Length: 350
Figure 1: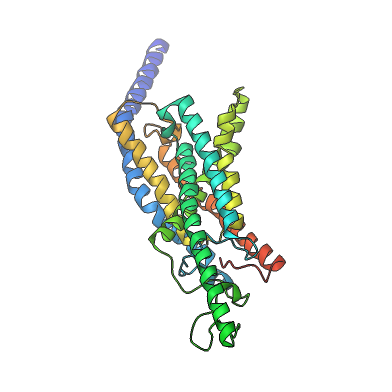
Figure 2 (figure 1 turned 120 degrees about the horizontal axis):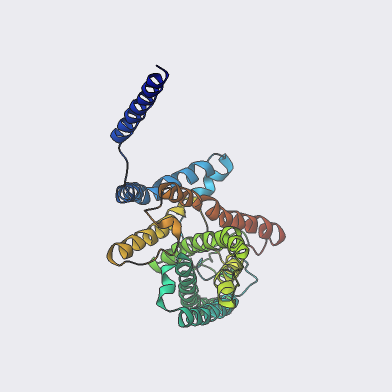
């Protein structure tokens, strides 16, 4: 009887295990390819619409204070904001010299980096950001040179008008900026509170401003992630930094911060959408490359076969907000400090 009872218990246990395995077999199990397809579907849906949601969330957050609502509204970009320093005492030629120096340094560093590592270097988002900064300073150099020429012509015509009016004995009211004949007085005779002329910027001026805001966000997210997350992990693995790696993750940020300190370009919250679109273009570029060619992923978190790929995509998308906020905060600090220290010379409106 004992043996029979033991056999019955074993049979019962086998039946229970069989029923459990049968139930588990009916539970749908996702294969690696199926999981990759679902991750791709999530990323395709989230990637194009993320700039809209992030920019709206940033704008809503910035508009929570009444004092900041006026600053975040779109304003007209004047033609001289792309090449005129934020202080009247600084001649525009100094910004030309700075942008020329920065462009040469970045171009030399980029050339050495590509010569050392080849074209595969452009698979990294960091190299995209570094190249964009180089293009920014090259484009800004051309605009600054053109602005200096216009500034020089305006000064020469202003000197001629002033000398002619003095000979004719005409009175020039400086407060209004217009003389009795209806001719506008030169910019350097305008009152300190007047910042810009009424001439709006051209298409190149708007493209340069967008490039500045997009590049600043890209540099911020690449350098911040590298020095706070990637570098400590590599340091644990006894990874040796070379000079070009340090330059790629520091020189662009340093030079861009210097230009930000002296230029007259605004940095509103709603322009974060261009920054997010840049990242979206990079991600789509990686998808196309890996769909056509079997190649390694420059960043493992982009691998769609990874189990938590959708979560990593969401985390990286949300990180755009604090990284963009870094430059927004720096521009606001510049406005507060320079307007307080140089109230008569400061001519920038964020």
